[in-house]
Length: 83
Image 1: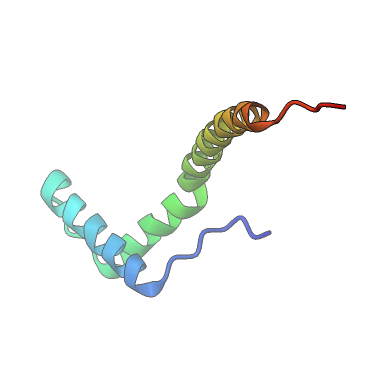
Image 2: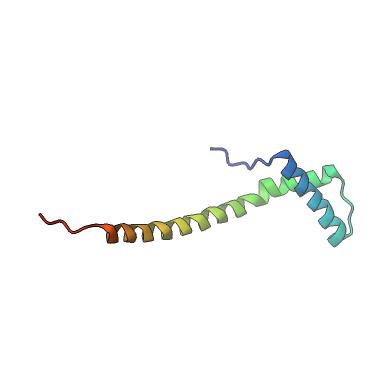
């Protein structure tokens, strides 16, 4: 299983555009496409694993709760055996 996140080119370009806007509007810095791409790459390789792991932890908790309720629901559906 590959652990690297692959973005489709359209999404990557949208993110690069957002990086440029953020640096321009918030930090008064004009970044080029290449610089913005490097920032995105940094976040993808160095920062995104933290978000990914948190998402995995969140979904694990949610699914654990769902399966607990599912087990209870299945028990309630069981019928009394006569023999």
